[in-house]
Length: 378
Image 1 (cartoon, rainbow, N blue to C red):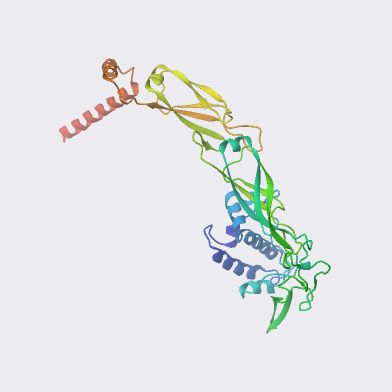
Image 2: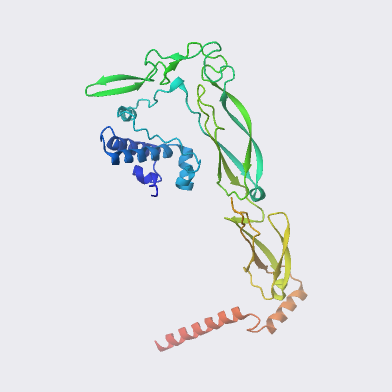
């Protein structure tokens, strides 16, 4: 069964702002939360869809990927592993979002997943054709070696927060409702550090510049996204690393224009070559060249197809085609003799020499005669 569109699930337009999506999510989460509808499997399914949709659309990078690739962006390791579909969440979690309280839940040892990173890379059309291995330098957060990511000074370790007992939250009863707030003492981590590591100030990570190798496969298109799992920021206090996303853009080419796997180019030819026939050499994207034969009487704008001379298709053993469009160039700055020869040619031309022009002006003549006859009889 096909998955529903995330925007449809949240009941918002694709142009919706973050505030509009958040408001819609809160309203729907209140309505479909399993705690308000115990035993209703349909409500559980609805609540799961709502959380999955909001988890993607609230994140700028995930939303951009979804807008471009749809659900395929998060399939087969595409990054859709972070959905919040925990039905064990208490109903008070929804109230936390509504009343502006922090939604951080207790984490074992204060371990938090690191943020995902984005890197924009520009490549040439030739590099997209053949593929390449590129080295990129990424300033990011890495695990602190001094404390091995724990955040505690060497010889010590974090201890359970005495305020919340390690839960990361404290409960408050207000009338009929029991609300949970993030523990102020440990900021929802469930642990506190009395002796923070001086190297990382207790965060468990430090900023470093890393050099990574990125494999760009042959056939990539403009806007292609490459995901490097676990190469993002290090998590807080030894938490798992985020991912690194490489977004590719292709620089303009001086000769070729790309359309999917096909390549297009325009080549000017002389009026004589177009009339009498001939040929010319054109470069190909693989660095070679090929001969294009121009038949006698070729008209300006005619396209010639060179099979399998285009771009490779990503992850497929096939290639696109190359299309060469010829443009007949009108001569300029003619000498007196050249003008005389052209005038002589014009005088000797017939409907067989220029059939399209003859046919066009014949239709114009018939139209004007018919118009004159109608006006005369009026």
